[in-house]
Image 1 (cartoon, one colour):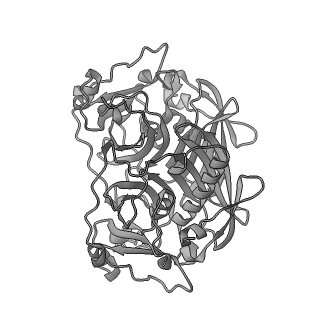
Image 2 (tube, one colour):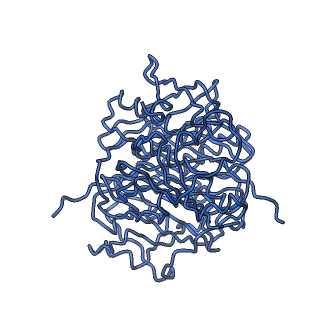
Image 3 (cartoon, each protein chain N blue to C red):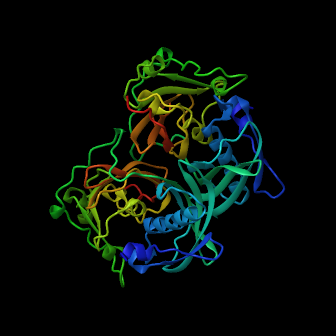
Length: 274
Length: 274
């Protein structure tokens, strides 16, 4: 079993709607907190299982909205699900990650059917221009971390042009560009795209050196089943205003197709004017 | 009281978490179904009232996700709310519109504080290029409608370049551009922006003549308190694939600031290849 599948495994209880999960240290960010996209993927796996058990014929999460409420710790948690509708075109599920009685992540999951190898009937954008994978660079660790963490589970390499912020020379562009692979070579499927869409650091790091930028609300649309191989990602900030930023993430597969689009709203604390 | 405020009024029951609403014929689309953005705004008004009653200090919906499950009829309905978190920066609420015991709209609402007159600290896009309001045109009615409908409640006028589809000459651009006002002159505030973000017909009408394009999942970020006056809107399709389309809506105020960004995923049935 690939590391991602093991870490996001869900175990149904007898009620058929509650799932036990074990939040895994190897998918944490500094501070030993599980990565947001990892939580999202875990919740969506439970939601998909609940919908399938309720007769939904669609296998793929195609739209997922999440609110991040509290950061859970590594260890046991549950996902509570409620199937709201099973339909011909789409089915819809509400799901909540709970730890120690407190809701941590609230999610809306829409399931649909994507056809492997399909192409856009209209639209789509060409892949982000990105240096070849071998010329791209991992981000140095920002904090010492004890034990395994997200860095051990994935391979993200950035276009050298975006990494100035690591030398305190931010590009000012508001944009990160990177290649993505799982460290163990697992191919990315629609469920895993939900994780990938939140796997990069904040794009605002290329603009301003703030503390952490907690995501409040995240939406991912999965538009295609990725072809095997590495993914290319572009993560852009749009507007920083009133202590909030909205960012957009686009992901392309090795066949140059746009496979996911995500937006998020996050809070950030700007440094005082100098 | 302005028509929008009357139509979206919410009346708390003694439990403090359930709200009675009356879905109003004057906010319906053809088929006598309440407009999706109107439902969203009504649900968000109830969520905001519930959060305020629970001590949340933030007045504005800043991020709203909705799943459209079933189309309710005009008439009485309830909104059930659950405050998930009240925090310093943001508060978060889950809410559901129910009619005749069936969930119709499931929503996640994040509240924050926007400062009137604030400008972006970074980013933002200039307003869409649009013919002057007096040179723009309303969309002719597509179906005969008995009694009042959405067309009577709002004034939407389109850039003439996008209306070819009304003459069976679609532009192929995947883009609608329009001015927006409420018919009674009410200014648009953050709550009303939630409605405006879903007030235009599908952008896919400029590409292909399908039947209705039901929205499955909609996300609106409100980024600023609009200045008084008309709004400018651009609504663009991104990718049509596997019977689904994702669309993005941008809204600017009379002070040329981007005040809302919305994305949606909708289902559409393409005509058979000719």
